[in-house]
Image (spheres, rainbow, N blue to C red):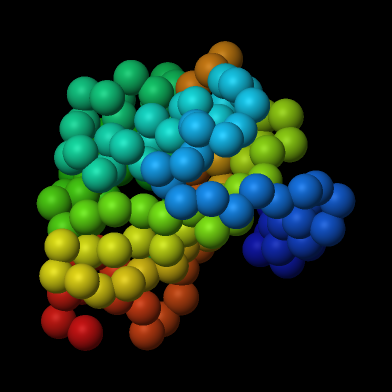
Length: 150
């Protein structure tokens, strides 16, 4: 799917769904018991706790990760290339959350241990109660967790 169609799909989903804006601490407290929501909560919690074992439990076989700098990398490459960023992450605050069946979009404000802010738009696709695909969208000029020099 081309980037244009992905952006178009995101726009359609955003315009047709109700968003829930909450901090990560309120993510489970004030929302329905949707199993995919619980998996997303576990995703952000694993990052905050730097807990690879918990992360691995919620990733489906065949999981892929994509971002502006990665194209559908597998679990092993994700762990090698992306997971080390967990060491720099203090917490995530969920700004917007949209769930549509086995698809979800989340906008987060992340905070690094050094007090820098970074903002992501995360797209999740679920299969059998686990994350089968995750796409992270971010732009230039942001304080990504692994870029403490900015």
